[in-house]
Length: 499
Ligand code: TAP
Image 1 (cartoon, rainbow, N blue to C red):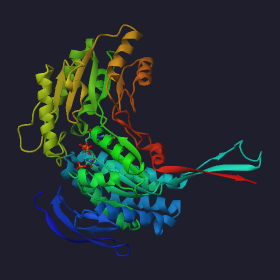
Image 2: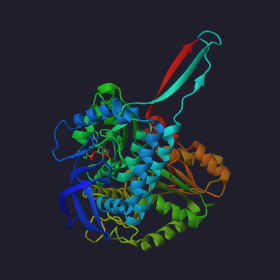
Image 3: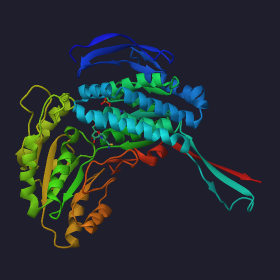
Image 4: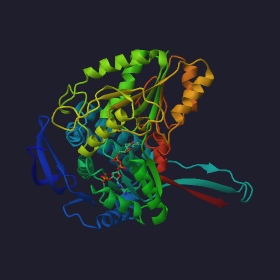
């Protein structure tokens, strides 16, 4: 950031709660923006980073869960608070999107629509669930015949930890935190340390919305210290995590050893996208490009590997190259930019290395493949073809704007389709998938046999707040979004009466 000023700021309206913080003001995107840059515990911002920050945050969250306004608030009022926060986010939409764009490199047009827009939708969606959390009544045998009643109650779990990655900073926070709070829990959140600013702005807005102290606590520390302490905490009862598979495994181990806390893990992906020769080619090209290059490839459900039928393979590549050449790389705040900088330098360096590996192992580099020759962390949109199943780039996620194309021979019958699906399923990841064909039977067969948490037919990236999202195998387990996500943050109590 240039032109930034660190200053004492105060938030809150004339009548609402007020809090002071050491914040940053800057002028960007033709507007003044301000945001905190400190820890947020018990509705207070703190400068000092101490070893016991996580303990302090957990104790604040526990106190808020057990006593105080949040503990006694009825479900509909809880919903109103979530709606209020969503309204405030709406009012600060441009500020949030500018901040997200500066912090993560997302192009502003996407930041406003997806990073911020979908975050607001998520808060509204889960706000609506607050007063609709219901149990059931169950007829049972092992009690006085016909003079018994068994019913279940869906209760919040308690203090939850949430750990999020840097690719969609505000959206990842919102997906988990909105479901967690709608269920009535309290939270200790650790956003990714490279992109924590919108999470801290959300903390500021939550004070204005009127969330009681301790309900939301945000610690923008490192994964190895702060994240690990959350995973190890004996008082946290549930941990929601989105990030890489290796760290997911570490977290699951820590959760087991510390106190058997429940975990849900949204991890890496290498999602196959199958394009049959009978597909609408224009549409397939457009959607495959968005499947790969959306948010500069920093997208967990990115189409990690394309399988294209031989008789359209060359035509498909010619069209994709033609379209990629039109992509405007540049300042993410410029409204005409299609492709912004990668999130941080270490990630850019990993992408350069990834492309080098692809070249060395004999894949054909059709376009891009290196850092763009301009200042900033830009990686060229890249296309590889002739990628065979044994190659590193066929198996490993890049998490960047790199299209990996493999060919399959023209399909003669069902056995060929099944062989193709076996190739697509031959990965330990199983987050998303896609298929393009005009033959609905073929599409449904693929969607049935493909082992992935999501399958898009004749579209891609159509994620919605109402539809469950999450993977299988080493892409993790547990869902974000939809009613399933709410259930991740609830426990069921069974009550039996004889009368
Ligand atoms: P990670 O390195 O796994 O980091 C994710 C989060 O975990 C960060 O906040 C990180 O902290 C924290 N962390 C690191 N070590 C930890 C530890 N020992 N204990 C607790 N927390 C720890 O992933 P990333 O590089 O940020 O994100 C890229 C990966 O996330 C990709 O593989 C991508 O596929 C995956 N991803 C998946 C999804 C879904 S929905 N499945 C969505 C987005 C991303 P720091 O701030 O120190 O890094």
